[in-house]
Length: 251
Ligand code: MG
Image 1 (cartoon, rainbow, N blue to C red):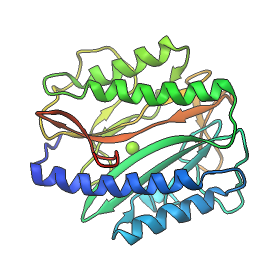
Image 2: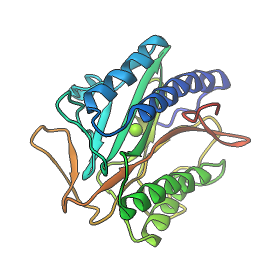
Image 3: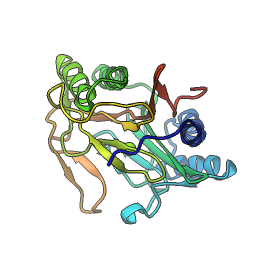
């Protein structure tokens, strides 16, 4: 069942979303050559705790980190480590979830470290824009798969591929609610979008094949061909005025 939230509940989701957005900004400012993914995790965690939030990923299905930090060919679910330094030319996907007063915010960005190559820069730009294209479809009266279709069509028109095995999701008092939101598919399918739905839309885009595999640590998802991948995510709410981006600073 898809839970439609009241105006008050959407405000609670917005509060959580702003904590996530602030944590991502703090991490973005620190993401430079030589920093470890463990240090980025520490920064995000301190930011969330200071605002009376709880990192949402820790122990979720047993995940060992407070955030996900996924470098280069890693797609999602990278485990932060004090031993993992990033260097100029890398890209790093940072996924942050926080629970604030019982409501969850969930967002992700992919950041360039120092100077990155042109293909990687294009990958980041296309993935960020794909998220925007998806959000634009999150309006009352559309169907769920209109979001999926807009993302896939845009990404493939730019020569990249969308990951099939992991999807966006509803977000509320738990991190993963119904519905699932694939980043591919035909338009005009699935439930009609209604006021008060809150969704985490999260395209994962690969330079090469869309196929992925999970590493021996049982968490880190990487591309099968080793080519790079990017991930952008926002939690949004569907309102009469259009999509409300809960995890964008200042809404
Ligand atoms: Mg998510």
